Amino acid sequence: MPICSAVLTLAPDTGAARDLLDALGATPQITCGPAVPRGDGSGLPDRLAVLLDTVSLSEEQGLLRALEEHPGTGMIEVAFHDFSDALDLAEHAHHPRRGNRRLPEVLS
Image 1 (spheres, rainbow, N blue to C red):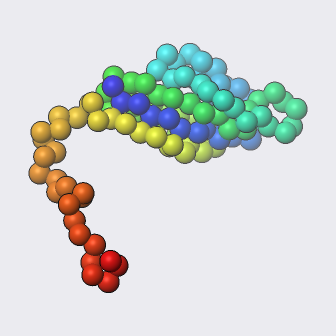
Image 2: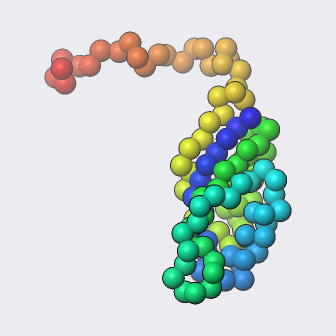
Image 3: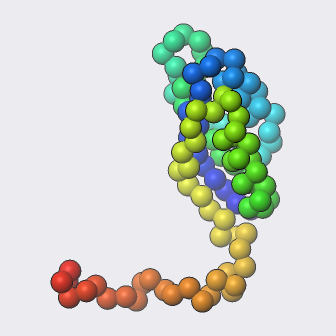
C-alpha cells in the first residue's frame, strides 16, 4: 500500500480553505496531522500535515491530483513517499546497484 506524507498550504480564500478541510475529513484515505494556524484569527490552518494511505499508485496519484486541483489548496509539498510494496521488485532488477561504485580518483 503506497504511503505519502505531505504538507498542504491552504489557499488564502477562507471559503475554499474550509471546503478543502471538509473534503479532507470526508476522505478515509487521508489522515490530517499537525497544523500551523493562520495569523488572521479565522481558526483555519495555514499549513497542514497529511498522510495518504491508498491501495494502489493510481489511487494515490488520483488523490494528489484532486488535492492539487482543489481551489482550497495553495501548494502541496511531498515530504515522504513509499510505494515499495506496490511494485514487483523483480521487474526492476535490471537497474544498476549504486552501493558498489567507487569514487573518482579526484574525489578520493
